[in-house]
Image 1 (cartoon, rainbow, N blue to C red):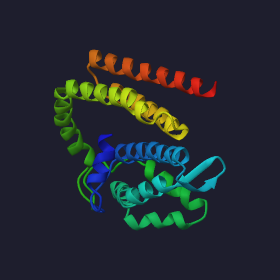
Image 2 (cartoon, rainbow, N blue to C red):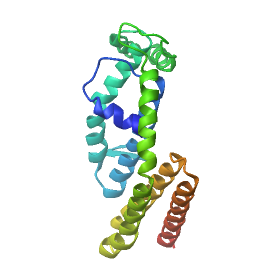
Image 3 (tube, helix red, strand yellow):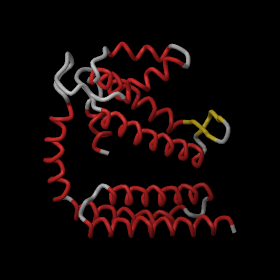
Image 4 (cartoon, helix red, strand yellow):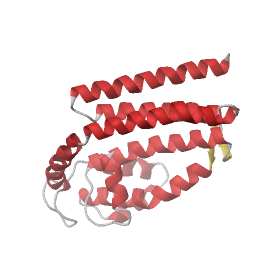
Length: 219
């Protein structure tokens, strides 16, 4: 998640270099958010373009528009990282071959030394990561408490207000699933075994709860 936020912080930054981990972690989390926007559009009835079983609508296009520039910027910085000009991104305009060529460039290892676009980002980011890790470790209790409180609010207050509506029931179930995924994601990013066990417990518990709701709505 840190790499995703790091890319957003460099919203209009087309200079410098981006290591492979930064690019691909951003791409992974971005893909997850895109799936969530599609699910929201389908469940809330805000989709207006259907492609097979998928519905693209308001949430998808607002999010896609919001991440277009930082996504383009991190792609250009990734090209810089291997010593290529950002203009190399235009090879994607070549049908089929261009996409494969661009993919190869994106998975190519960083230039180990400083190049025309700056120093190797891995060295400076690793030092910065150690400082961030210490900060995260000191915030573990707050993260656990915050996740627990959000879970309680979603599970106990939201259905009492809106569960009578079928669409709201589907949305409520979606919120529960998202909350459980957040809990599990946090768990696997935490090295403290006790805190990790608590987060996994809550994540699995909420997933089971959402499964019972889904089964109940079917029958």
